[in-house]
Image 1 (cartoon, helix red, strand yellow):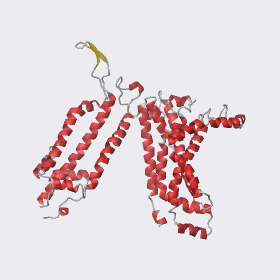
Image 2 (tube, rainbow, N blue to C red):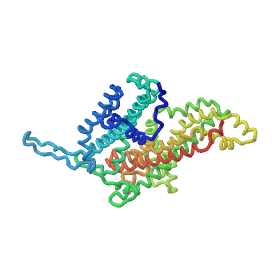
Image 3 (cartoon, rainbow, N blue to C red):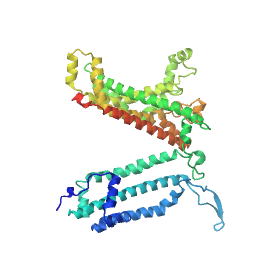
Image 4 (cartoon, one colour):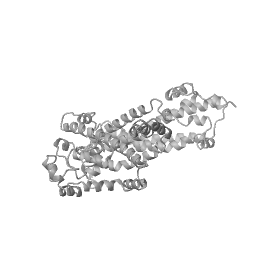
Length: 477
């Protein structure tokens, strides 16, 4: 018997290996391009031949019985509107055979994914049967179906483990993302809502509106710049303040001068034990225009003082109902909520801080602040850098804090923002949510969603690329 590793083709490109299999393969390899089970029949692998044939038949039936109802209409997304017509046979008004634009878009997308998957399976199948041909020609043992199953429980077990997660990513992540991208190039909104109306392709007009194009949606450009600016400001300050605050609080609680540190640590962890939405709703009520905090401020004369010096013009302090005030308060409230999480993370990391470096620094006369800047912070950034990047991206999409603190409290007085269904305190993600749930403006929401994805992906790639440059790990070894 010839060793199997000596007859396997060298690693080749995906398409180059496919081309080589078609050129050098025998008749059954070439026939596998049309009948997926042909190559396995030739090598007496009848179970595989049946499975591949059944899979091919399923793709054909899917194409004829399902895909062809929708894909031919993909270019127009439908032309027949829903109307009631009188049926002379039943003597009733019935809906005609109308087109549903969203179903056409969604089911066409699913059909494209199925066809692309089928093409990939076909290419891999041709390469596999060519490999079987080489094994047969060189006298290498060809596994039976039972032996293949055993291999997927042993040396190829990673394929078995990854199959379901990959299918889940395709179904629950890839298809929704592609659908989001497609909708961004349509006029899908409240005026074009299936099934009563149709929507169609509009090219890049939604993005032109988002970036300040003319027409009725000119205010979208105005709102987009301001919402994007606040989103980035919020993401930066909410990440930095909680990160630095968590480290400082951890250092304070771990200090030998701090008494009963376990008690203080427990008190700070209470904010973690209480569900976040409960805390945020309570805080929103506390700082409402007629909330308890405003009552206290009015009682001690603070409200009148701020009004006298011109900082406010109302009978209350607009903590969460006016621009500027709301922005600052949201960041401060987030510090109270987010610092305990970072404190727990920082405590675990600081316990592993190299003690010899700290002792050497103290012997050399370094001050506590110098130790913090030169040793503690670089080490924290090295260990928690990936988590810090993740926190920044998470805060760009931090829906809970913004929505729960400002919903039904903040009302914009800026007409241009109101025309775009936006508020000064909105993040891109809360603006997107409002556009879909309250105004059914799916086209602009999809365009904003793409922008959010681009911002997060570009920042993540740049940040991680910067982190892995150089030999930073050797510094702490």
